[in-house]
Image (tube, rainbow, N blue to C red; front, side, top):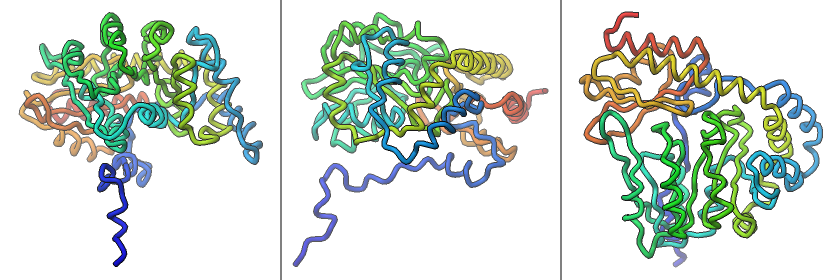
Length: 369
């Protein structure tokens, strides 16, 4: 008797579902809803970027090259030697997939500092890895990094340590000295800098890639640059590391239009500065407007989202989300943690949406406008 198809799947992938972001699906089904939930940029691409998209869309009948021009630009921005230090990906999600493939075999361990970006676990589990969660420390209304516990979690099976900086969803940075300590373990160390542009590249740890070949920095154009729909990410590392992880790339993994749109975005420094200023001013506005709600914790953010914990108010995050949706706003839910079910998050929206969000939350908690 022939075997069932289920018997041919490798054991560690059985039952893994397709990743579906329900809140994004909901937003596309109902465009009237305000998308304040997915860390998208509310501002459309600049005219320079749009012009590049139009120009290269007329060449969409041709295969793309290996992105030498945009990789050279990225290396220049980051003071690296050249394109040999840069690998492009279809969003940073594909970058993680390629990096993880180079190091992980079934039974290996990946250390992640939690709460964190869910893609690490998705890609790690697909390869049969055990995800080792090292929780941040919730103290004095702040979520602190715990680098000592990261080091204590290392075992002979540890193949990757991944830390987001600034962290998603907490929005804060880890002290630079701790990156050096972790790098010195020699273990492949992935530093996720998806949101670093909101604070400037002076906060980046990319210089470590010159000294430590085990350090890999990842970035994306989905956030500060506002190109989430174009799917463009990249990795920065030593040449020999880029050479190896690039070996798992699909041919032509990044299309012609995203590559040249990305180059235009990198060259449009004025456009980036405007987006960063808009975002950071909005973060300040929301933080100041909601900080006076009794028992309501607002986490300081250096990104384009803000994390909240309303557990001490007696309300839950789910209740806030449900109320916001009656006002046409989609927010991001968070799982219960640290003994509280009051967690939720907002993504910076347009100026109108930010005011609407503030009014909605204040109204929910019985505060006057």
